[in-house]
Image (cartoon, rainbow, N blue to C red; front, side, top):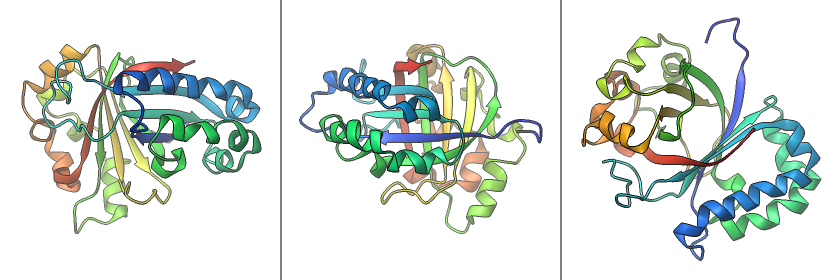
Length: 239
């Protein structure tokens, strides 16, 4: 990000579905939940974009990508008008009356309990593909938050792209967590690696564990042993 680039803010979910909801029904239930936002004027005014990414299961529970988590069901990206939206939405009367009561139908708990607020940094500005691999990363022991952010959010871009696995990624983004995360979601950074297809992503990582195929910059500041990697495809987006 250069000094001329506008700062872009996001809310990112790392979601589990309601256990009573079949895995195959999750994406549709999630779309139905998102549609309720049309009734909330402030959601439409303050959330500029939504991208719902559901975990791939078409080859195996991990989607055929070694190292991908099977503990969660989806990742949601909400592009915000500004940072104040991240607080306003939790207190918005329409959202509380219309969307919050529907959350337990779709998710394992309320959305606020698994949402992270982030600043976005685009490392490779290509088109968004149909498939995304996400990395939810905690900083390594001995690395301060300031040191982590200096590398992740503001350091040179090249070291974060310097691996064969990422050469085929159409779009690469780092998101820096900027507010206190919910309990159990104490991540410092969230990476997005976008690919044209699931097969393209599998080919990029060459059948090996995701952790072993990333540039060394990730291991230098992140604790990859307890990172969560999600292999997903887009199942709903707007605009």
